[in-house]
Length: 261
Image 1 (cartoon, rainbow, N blue to C red):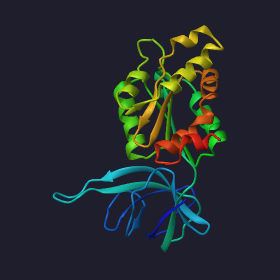
Image 2 (image 1 turned 90 degrees about the vertical axis):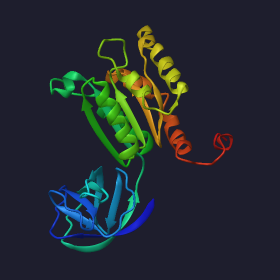
Image 3 (image 1 turned 180 degrees about the vertical axis):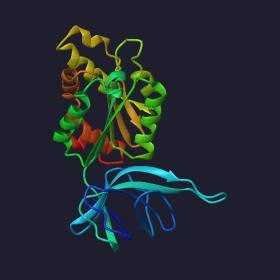
Image 4 (image 1 turned 90 degrees about the horizontal axis):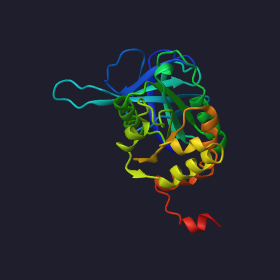
């Protein structure tokens, strides 16, 4: 999908895989700065393309303005190929949905456990949707950190789909459902029932899960269990619904009854 065109200028070679900051003309930021003379609102996963070269948007921040002056957006981008110094008109495009998976694990955040569930979510959803961008986060079981991250990923970074894994049980550090409920705007109890039903087919312990699903802005947020096996089981009934859910959430006016024919 083509979004717009924008002129970018870089004063030196930016090698493939190298990260750089992209800001408005006159913006001063640390590191290599790719300057734009005009810029629309971007989301993680957007691409700047010019022939075989281009950039991928990885993250969105704000550059504080001087006293009395407005702040300006500052984008972290990654070169998808070597970009020689120069000025070019890039086409801004978007390919597929973007997914952020968030693993809640004190041990994982401390580097004491290898996370398998988050990458598995990325793999399974990508096979279903053909994602344009997958990004993972491993954080401790801290409600304030999770709340802040969910809001940022949905409203600032612009991810389409956010899936958490872990922290859905009844343990003293299981805080994922409460943190999620505090930020979502529309709850999706059908998603929650589908996950519970899928779990109960495998084990009576599925009744213990308190996983929550809902929306925030244009993002779909779903809590998943912590184990890879349970992630696969709970994702199975949801995967066929994701595309339609995102289409409706993001403004598709088509009648649902027509789509089911």
